[in-house]
Length: 287
Ligand SMILES: NC(=O)C1=CN([C@@H]2O[C@H](COP(=O)(O)OP(=O)(O)OC[C@H]3O[C@@H](n4cnc5c(N)ncnc54)[C@H](OP(=O)(O)O)[C@@H]3O)[C@@H](O)[C@H]2O)C=CC1
Ligand SMILES: Nc1nc(=O)c2c([nH]1)NC[C@@H]1CN(c3ccc(C(=O)N[C@@H](CCC(=O)O)C(=O)O)cc3)C=[N+]21
Ligand SMILES: [Mg+2]
Picture 1: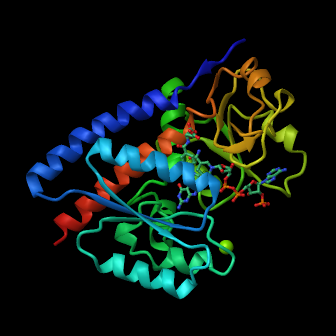
Picture 2: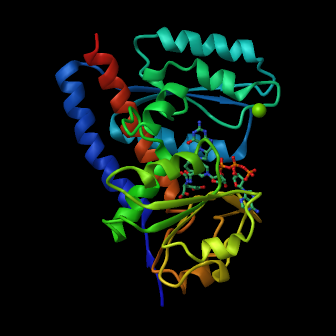
Picture 3: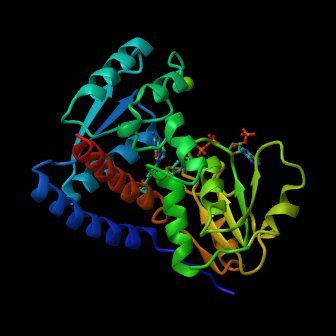
């Protein structure tokens, strides 16, 4: 078997185009241009890529974007002060603090400090809570992108067994939540570094989502024939970008698979823009 390639780059471009129209309508009706602020502390290379792609996408969609580039020496209080200022700035609708943060900064304290109405990553406990309860304010960007990619080949996931590799707050956990939502109705198994007999579990997956951060971790033996394989991983090997899935052999077994690059990454950005518009709407229509 040879898998269908799930073209995230193409799908994301269509979503961004759709969004461009929505932003245009919103701006012409309200006079408000959605404004996303990204805060990058230090020089994490993966974040650099993300920030670059995001800026281009914002401009094309009619979303204003501002980047605050802070030195890796920035203190937690300096960062909290900046966020406090952005929280009350009427001209700013969305705030994204790039992760990871340098060691001297406590990530949770910073994420908790972002106004929940401006929290385009959906990291704030209030937004996580709303998602857990099935009434999300913002959809988590990367997991939402994975759902959209799955829908391309599998519009009905009811009763399917989805196995998520990884339990991070940014990908693994919210991914499981979206998959078990009413409407998606998958049966979810979440795996992590302490999971026993991993291969036995992954081989049961109708949908396998890899979000581990280890190049080529998912091998063909771990995949059930015909499975849908979503590769969230972004790893650099010899200067080249690769996912968590050993792409060539797995693509011979899966029914559908996302490439890296060109799969989940562009979808994350499209959903971020969507959340920036949602944030602008929330702040414009609640005043
Ligand atoms: N394409 C995109 O848009 C995005 C891509 N990414 C990429 O996705 C990957 C994952 O990111 P993120 O979730 O932030 O990573 P984290 O490092 O926060 O989480 C990795 C998860 O994988 C688990 N894990 C590690 N080793 C194993 C193993 N041998 N077997 C089973 N589980 C294991 C960890 O388990 P434990 O909890 O026990 O430590 C952890 O839950 C990275 O490559 C990242 O760059 C991230 C965000 C967006
Ligand atoms: N607060 C926060 N929110 C995030 O969503 C977040 C973060 N921090 N920290 C870093 C990770 C990683 N991430 C990526 C998103 C898109 C691409 C992306 O656009 N990838 C493209 C292009 C890659 C390239 O050209 O090099 C692709 O896969 O095709 C990559 C990585 C978001 N993250
Ligand atoms: Mg830290």
